[in-house]
Image 1 (cartoon, rainbow, N blue to C red):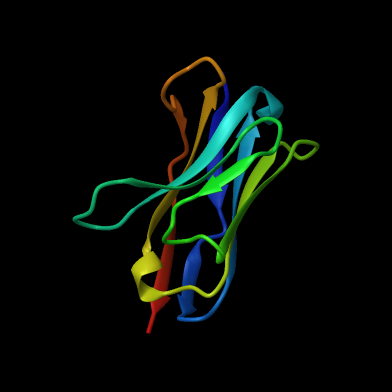
Image 2 (cartoon, one colour):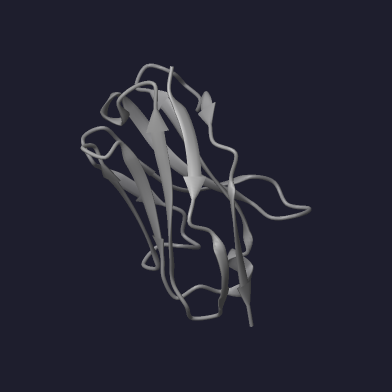
Amino acid sequence: QVQLVESGGGSVQAGGSLRISCAASGDTLRNYYMAWFRQAPGNEREGVANITGAGSTTYADSVKGRFTISRDNAKNTLYLQLNSLKPEDTAMYYCAARRWFQPTYNYWGQGTQVTVSS
């Protein structure tokens, strides 16, 4: 099964950018649908973006036009480019994976913290 490790989080000012990464091991990412989720303290976890094995993407309305999900199958890595960051984007960001036939995301990383100050 696949193991996922996120990196690249940090603290930025509003309007800034970050790119967070999710490195996979144990299996190849092209076999999985991938997604980014986030959870802020006191809030439920929410889906941010997802990408299929064929590269089709969808985004939450709150990040559409600002965030970009991508995958590099050669590097077995998933990315999330975060632009025009807002304080409300502050959260722990998690990558997740599922096989195409699985209804839920079964594989999760440990998370990377993104903090946006005003």
